[in-house]
Image 1 (tube, rainbow, N blue to C red):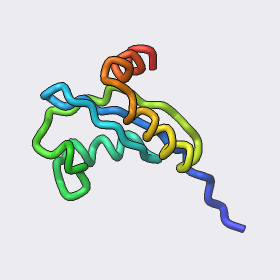
Image 2: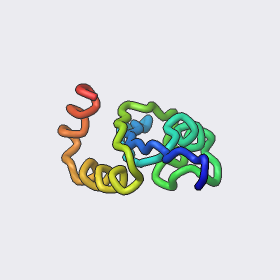
Image 3: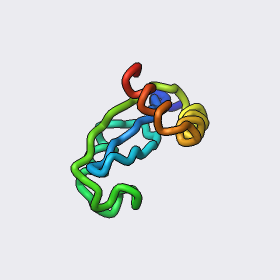
Length: 89
């Protein structure tokens, strides 16, 4: 038996300087956002050179599988619905 706790997974949205929204999932939102901000090798290609970035939404979803499924749902939303989610979230 291991002492490891199950990781908590999150879905998040980042707004780029040009207004585009990027959706992703992670088990550590702060770390992942900092990786995106650093604009290095771990930055999502979509976000490279599009800073400054702003974290506009985060949602706790539990498991990695749940996070991946929720990410797909959000990515399929229309922009106006994503913005509504950001204001409610």
